[in-house]
Length: 61
Image (cartoon, rainbow, N blue to C red):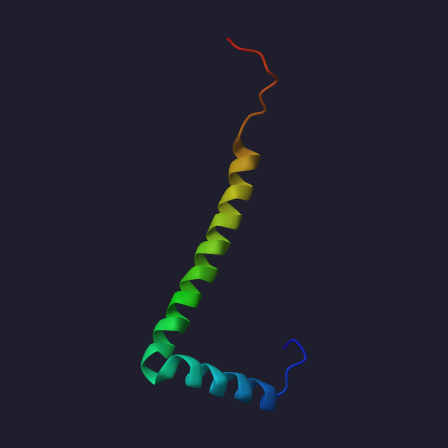
């Protein structure tokens, strides 16, 4: 996982615990998860919209 060992991950988790506190840590994780999910949806939705649009050759009816 990105070249991180157990000790590095543990250090990052402890640092996050100190920065945000025990009460806010679940809230931060939840919002981060939602952000990533929304980013994926937007990225995949944009790709589908581009494929489904007919190409406009500049002519008006």
